[in-house]
Image: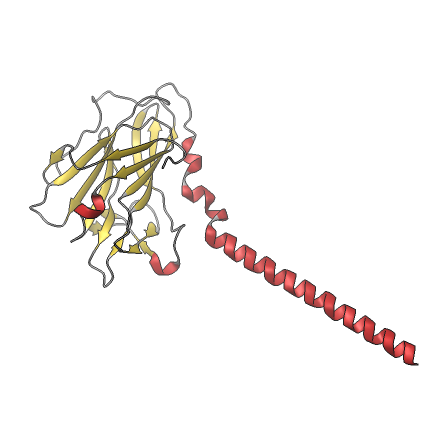
Length: 242
């Protein structure tokens, strides 16, 4: 499936490092990003088990191309305990989000995420997670932002994502990536307009609510018209009898 831009797959055969060692995810310290050219983004997955290797997977999406990253095999790899994910580009890292949450009574997964890479003249200034629960109800919407393995609110307020109950059919970790700011030539990135939060006003929930309200309004209007016809007919019948 190709989704509004590039679709990149990567399995677990990539770079490995232990613990929280600094990660440089670019070819050099002076690398800058240019729209339409190859960029560098590392997906970092860690667990609460100190003996586990932190897995670092490098993707090379095209800058400012709305991209869908799929980490093949992740659902099978992380099915027995908590797992966190963060992104690194150049020497800049995002906060973590919990990907597999096994601490709750119901095992849950936040396996669909969106990240925004902010550039300043091509240099990565920040990586933030797009905030919101656009494909689930309130019962599956939870706060989800971590520093190390502890929750944090430093990145903003609420910071919620959908955390759906685990099923055998649960898909692998999928991350949508967009860019904002300016590239190395001073050109403005445009892909940020495609992130899910920009379509919040047209979400499925809003659409259903809007449709329900319109249906109720139409029903009331129709009822009033029918009542009016009946009243007019009754009056006409009485006038005829008189």
